[in-house]
Length: 309
Image (cartoon, rainbow, N blue to C red):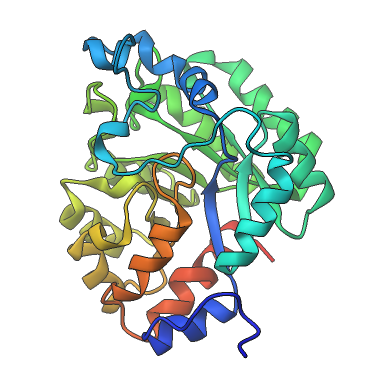
């Protein structure tokens, strides 16, 4: 009997790489539909369509129209979200997750299980110097457990483009602390303008801040080919697979990883916002990565970029 809780997938290279542990750098804890609705209240500051604003048939999750079978939990269904998450990690072979620390359960998870969880924080450059102080406070509180600063430029209110000079002090702070910056790039799922997340902005950022480790999230679509070109061009640019089911990983990114980009592409799952781990790890063995890519994709690239165990 296998010592691992999952069955062989038929992809020997994937199965072998998975045994070493999988790292996910974009994880949340389960929320009820009501909690999800409140979590994404900031989106409703700028959406205009009735379904996103609320009411009968409203979107609890603002990009929910894009996903089939969005994971749902009812109030009281989870006795202890931390224990539940640890069991889910063991069931799917996840060795480490990077999570936000916006609630007591998430903070408790990091404090009680530092071998399993590290910290991410979000940022809003509209806050000016206070945003930099927020990053400093997080670093003082968590030290080396703080692994990344993230942003959702299209979701900010007002929106801030990635190459807007408001973001420059945040990039400088990340360089100072040697912490990667992660951001959604490409057309956003919620029904809000896409302009702040144009892939072409990465060229200016990586040129002006060669010491900044920049990790893209949410696909860079429909400009994945341009993203691959920039990933090849800039040593400090990386790509993570958040918000995409494995069957929909862009072919330009898969091809890039298989050729010159094996060290630049990493798994990140977006769990539980739109995708269950059951779906992700069922589809993943069918991704056409070459054998040497799998351990880098599942674990090694995240270990190196985020300085993880």
